[in-house]
Image (tube, rainbow, N blue to C red; front, side):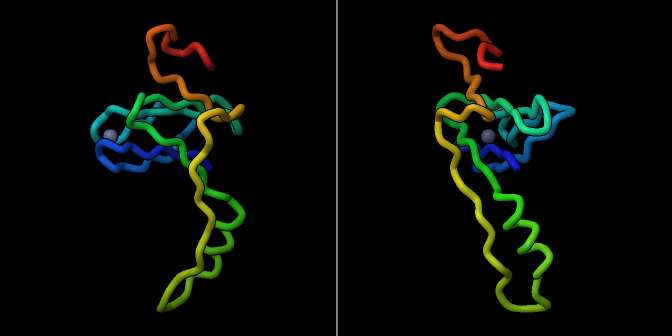
Length: 99
Ligand SMILES: [Zn+2]
């Protein structure tokens, strides 16, 4: 599962395929283009995140009645990722150059 974190408003947004989704302050956004691939933008503010789906599902399934829940894996995605492209505007890039 791909998400973005905005360093300006600290919002975390899960991306979806049917609409571009924005953080609370509007500086960062992103969208899935199919089941696997997605793009995001937001310049210096945006950080791409991933949840390891299997570990999240396992933790959800094992939700305790009380006490601490099970950890699941979330990670910061590298700046260069074949399935999650940074489309932030820069001097020499068009808006959707990397889609
Ligand atoms: Zn924001």
